[in-house]
Length: 484
Image 1: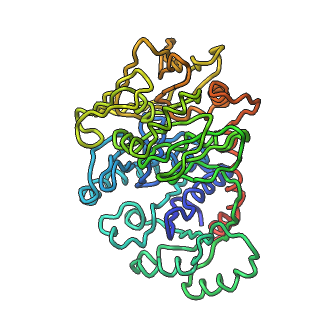
Image 2: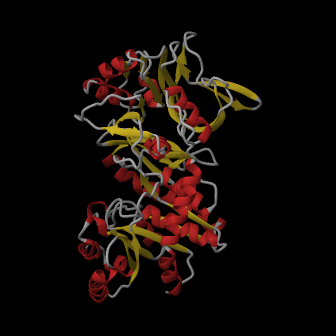
Image 3: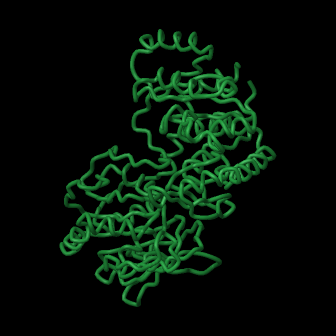
């Protein structure tokens, strides 16, 4: 089988679709194939800025890196960013199209499919192979009408599908059989084989089940992929609460309901001298060296969540005793005096009183700021540590003369002030996502916060290493596909 378009679907969310797509992209890239990833519809609050100035799911940016190509909005033509349990911001071709509730978006999907097929056609023109990731599970029969994320797309472009299940969750054979039972006859025929993910143990004990599955369905098991311990890759959406290292330097991040781009903390979670904990609701809040307020898709509501959970008093006590405090994007806005939303960008129009730690005010606007940036860390003693990041936010913050900039961003031979640091040097705020991804910036910020360490974490090098790990593990899968 020569791969031109192949779709990877899963029996459940988090079955391993993202990593399988990334692995296949890297393997094909190694063979000299010009390959691109694609996810027609993605629901995620972790996003990235693309080469064409738009916004896509962060997982698709990871897959583009695996393919050795620049991330483009055609790789994720429809991105859904939930702002409440029933409403979301709908992003089409990298730009905000509208805010919709679930029912309105379900009606809109017939229009969204047109955008998806436009992107697919452009990718076909520019790439030899396209590896497509589904969303959730194709067995969600309540969403079959107007489906653009799974079999609806596969049927529209007439591509083969492989089905992935996570054996670590248990019930893997029921997942495969149950998923097939929920599909139409033509959809069942479109599935060319199964992939079992995250297997650990004696493969001989699994083989009778594999034989039974193949006899029952008439479809081959293409590969059994191993459980890879210590894998660090950009999460699509869910927070992984357990960190890989337990260091002496304690960092807390409140797990607010609409947390966005929590991948900002991946480099910190990998740092051998850092113990980073996400603190959920009703969980004890331990003492820490540094507290970071993360980005949010609904800043005012998440601010109220923090206040109701007692975080305001925790932060006041933390700073009073010399602890350091950082706010990123929405968290930066929360640290200010006032957040104004005159147009109801994130819900009902109105104002919210901030936490009052920084002398800034914020006004949310309808236009979203999307750009990659680079510069130097202005708070650093020598001002030479480099920083790279990206901005994704709706609104502007205005700082008083009582603050000083956190960063100096370089653009068109000028240096622009970004973010701010409090006069007592205990509090920092910035709109920059990816602050800790660059080794120099990560080390400088941790030194500012009080960690004296020679360790430097190069997140991109770690990402490349882990992409190669999953690619090596998926060599049997690609061999099976190319033999079909």
